[in-house]
Every structure is written in C-alpha cells, then in structure tokens.
Length: 433
Length: 123
Image 1 (cartoon, chains in turn orange, cyan):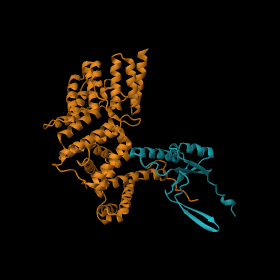
Image 2 (cartoon, one colour):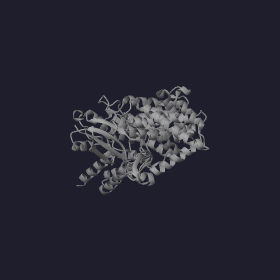
Image 3 (cartoon, helix red, strand yellow):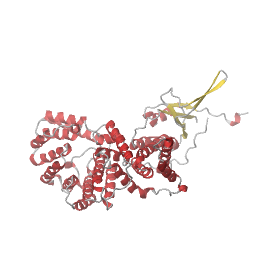
Image 4 (cartoon, helix red, strand yellow):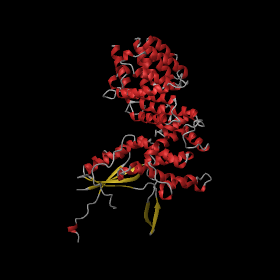
C-alpha cells in the first residue's frame, strides 16, 4: 500500500483555531471576493467561501491545519470562484470582466499586487453591508442577507434570530441575491444623497447582530460576546466615517455599549441567567458605560428622535443606576411610553409592561400584557410568558403562574434560559406546599 | 508494535448546509482528536482520498473491465484513513470510539497492517 503522509515533527499544533475564526473570515472573504467579482456575483463569492470552508473540514483532519489557514481558505475560494465563472463561458450570462479580475488577483504577475488583507477589510465589509441594504431590497431580506454574507451567520441561526423558519429565510436570501444581480447594484459606500434611506436598514442589521450576540438564542453559551463585539466594531466604523456618522448611529453605538457593559454580570459562575436586580454592578464595565455616555451626547444633535435614541436612554437609565432600588422606573416607563408610539411591537409592549409593574404593581402590568395581541411572533416569544407567569405568581395565582412558565419553557432557545425557567417552576412548587 | 489503518467513511455532501461556526466547531473536534494521537505518539500518518472519483478493475471473460467511480451502491464512501500504532485491536477500537467521524454517526473500519517480514529472514 502507499506510504501514508509522514507524521509532523512537532507534537504541538501549528496554529490555534481561535473562536469564531470561520464566522469572521466568512464575512471578510465574501466581502473581498465580491469587491473583485462585482456585487452581481455575490452568490458566486458566497458559494466559493462556503466551499473553501467545507474543503477545510474535509482536508485538515487528515493533513493537519495549514500554517496559514486564512491564506489557504482564500486561495481555495479564489479557485472555486474561477471554476464556476469558467463553467459559464459558453452561456450568455458569461462574465469575462469578473473572470479577468479574479485571474489578476490570483496571479499578481498579471497586474494587481496581492491584497493587504487586514487594511482593506473594514471598507470592503462596510461596502458589502450597503450592497445588502440597497433600497431595491425589502428590509427583512436586507437584514437576513447581511447576517448571512457579511457576518457569517448560518441560515438556522438567522431563523432563530428572527423567530422564523429556515425555509422562509432561504427563500428570502435567494430572492435578495437575484434582486442584486438583476439590478446590477454597485459595490460601494453610497453617496451622501443616497445615505439616509440606506443607513436605516444598515442600523437595523447591526442592531440585530448585536441582539443575537446579547440574547444568544442558540446553544449552551448564553452570551456570545464576540458577536456583540463584531456589531460594536462595525457600528464604530460607521461613526468614524464622516459620510455615515449620523446622530442615530451614535445613539445605536451608545445603546450597544451600555448593554455590552453589563455582559460580565449577566450570568453567574455556573452560566445561569441573573436578573437585573441580582447582578453584581461592580462587574459592569465602567469604561464602556462612559464611552456609551459620550456617544449618547454626540447623538443629541439634529431634530430626529429615533427608536435608538430612546433605547439608548433606557439602557443609560439602567447602566447609571447605582443599585436596582435606585432605578428611576418612572423615567423608564415614560421612555417606554414614547417608544411604544414609534415602535408598537410585542417586544416593546412586553418590556413596557415590566416597567409598569415596577411603577404601578403586577395587576396593572398583567392588564397591559393581556391587551397585547397574540401574533405569531409573540407566541414564540418566551419573555411574554415568563413575565405573565411572574405577575400571576406575585398576585398569588400559582396555577396560572405554572401554566405560563411551562409555556415559556416550551419556547426557550438557550440552555441557561431553560434552567432559569426550570428553577422558577421548582420554586413555585415549593411555594405551593 | 502492530499498526492499524482506521478507514473513515462519510456520506458526500452531508455538511453542505453547516454554518461557518458549525464547520469550525466540527473541525476543532477533528483537530483535537488528531493532536491527541500525535501527543500520545501513536499517530503514524493519514491521507485524504479525492472525493467523487475512483476506478474499479475486474477481469471478465479474459478482458479487464474498468469501471469509473463514484460507486453509488453504498451510501457512504471511503473518505480517508489514519494509521496508528497501538498494541492491539482493542486499543485501536478504543481510539476509534473517540473519533469525531464516529460521533457524527458515520462508519469506521479498522484493519491491521501486515507487518513486513524482518530483513534478516529474507533470502
């Protein structure tokens, strides 16, 4: 039989596969390839990067991790994209421009110098975000597409972030990519005149990315700090680019910073969820809160009051309260009253009811909750059931409380959420005795 | 000490829909398993086989018949192999039990390599 590959000389692995390397690289590599191939070929760029990562899964277990994993991945992606483009040569839609650009990229002797990856990445990723958030696309499609191609989310992860199904998300993605191709959308950061309508969608996307990291709907790890960091990084990039540094962008960044500052205190040593009133506030990141306050001040320009302004104010009210008892709930309720006018979504209404409970008590809060219509989304939204159960418990309606906690348990996504609700149910059983 | 080949089979395109995060998580398991073999000094080599290809030869009525792969009669195809050096089949089985390929529900076949005849006894 053939002689197997020789064993490596060193017993230590050549390189650490840092957390989320593939997720990060996915967005960077798709952005990079899309700049070379043009936005019309976004689907080819995405396929090429996915292919490269699957090739890594096929080859690295046998051959070991290469010394330069990123370079390995991008080379495989280049060649996959080239193969796909060449296959179209006989067809009407053959894109010789893209093939020429890619050939130059692969072989620097034919023209262009090899890319300096780290320097170009930020702009390439911003440009791709604006492609994904083009006004020709419906907003939900923009958000899903950005999460998929810029941020490296899987379809299942996006479905969970949206409380939707994988089939629905897939359809959205396919249609979005077709729209980009058919409209020949350009790969660029938009001009000042185009900016306002495009920026709104971009901010939605970044906030959803942050929320996915913050609420962590998947798996065992409640907090994917890394996704929050990624959202903060991209939003910070927007505040640093004069073309995109609008008050609303500063408001969103402030909101993210206030929430991220509380991340270290949100779970205990066992990884279990801690409520706001149980958190050790000395663990909150003071430097981050101060950074948030600076951006909140920069957000206070112009005459446009966005939902991000209100949410940042809300987060600031919590982040600057010395202890839970000192929380200014009347101020918070007033902010929610404004927010529910701008954004009467079930999530906002549920959170308003929770603030109302602090100001007027559980009976008033329960009335408010019960008046929120049960749409398809809020049924799967476990926070509603948890709050409803909690208010019933405070009012002494223990059987109803149990029913709602059980409903919440049925739609909880993460392990810590599950353990939190199981603990609630156990405590309830003891109270009943 | 005897050497064993661990033959890993995988169904093709099983992983097409994994997210980058999931691909990395799976890959990390393989890397850790492989590193473990190296650290225990039982790793002797490994080789990936090219997917979706292959040739089979067989004689029929005195003629050699060549069939081109992939061979679709089985659900799983041989994707690659590891060679390890351990005292017995039992040890090879224990090692294979922890292989991520098995954790993913796929087949592993173990075969002992025929030890070469010592040079001193050759004519």
